Image (tube, rainbow, N blue to C red):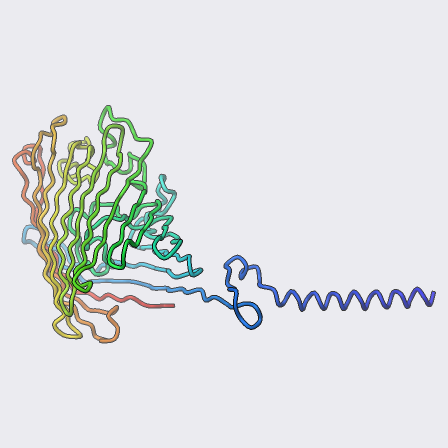
Length: 398
């Protein structure tokens, strides 16, 4: 019996020592999170180096007090939150980064095509496969040219009609190649819409038109920088299928000059579609049927001048046309809508070191001219104006 107790005592101590030793060994191993995130590298005194995960967390908002006028008469005065957005972006790994942004000024209902809320603008992962090539997967910005659509929307007080009716955030995949330090090529394939045809087109597809089984959009984009990177040129071409036998084509270019206190750009945007993809003509005519064979052409010009470290001013103008390029039903070939807008804005930065916080005064005038074809079909588009006084702030929470 005494020998049995001695053996049992020895076994218990050996087991306790083994458990204690195992605990010490486990403490030296990377945690599950560290292993999943690969937070340890290959070189350090103890055999490992901790890799930092970078995270940026911004809260963006812009609000204003507004006066609205229609045909020169007061229509309404109100306060409005123009934009409220939450943004996360950073790196999980030296070759893996992420970007998520949600806007609280958009509907939160999920779209049926991409199973993504319309309020989510970015939800993607970027894989840096090497020095020259990146791969972006998820919801992202369409790789189309044009500075107005490309720049952060907080910097745009009023978009042109083309961009107002263009779904710029789509789900898909994009490859980016650095051809040289000053030239980038991007090839992207995404959905060409977020939802089903009955949601995209107010009156559904035209009679006799069948839905497509491949609602994709392919885009090729070139970016080039010249004159010590003060001149930035971007040109893109896109093609996709909206319905069987009904395609869409986009050709866009942005020309940007930025040096010292001056920022100037000229965008040229053209779209040709077998169905009124932007719904601009269809909504104005409102005849209970979707217009076919439409094309839209837009010119946007802008000049910013920061005449003082705390002050910036800009003038902006847009000229746009919407036409039918081939007869269909009651809609004959020709131009239907000509639109233009003029804008003037003064911005004040109360804190010189923080350009994310600004106070602005903005004026926009929107004019429209309808052709006799459009008037015959009962269309009407009044001239409008808006005067705004507001603030904008990007809060770097993290």
